[in-house]
Image (tube, rainbow, N blue to C red; front, side, top):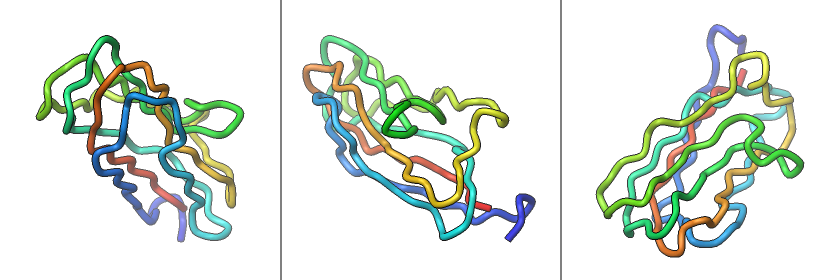
Length: 121
């Protein structure tokens, strides 16, 4: 598998809580493959209150190393799809490393169906 023909994986997190800081999912790509974050999207399932919450994709040492999605204060059914994805030079996931999908817990209430798309090559 080469960079021009990557394996695309979408990691889905249904009704992920945005109200507590936590790692939602830790993933490792296919053995020996590097990766790049392609995108992060979310659809709010429980209204987000008081403050926007961030969904981050990174490492244990740098939570948003590859990208982040801000989920604003909003009602259920609202979509959040304006993720900040790091440029190609800064968005290279090393082979066999752990990627953490997390939230900062800034909202006092809220949940969203989150999808994180990573291309592995």
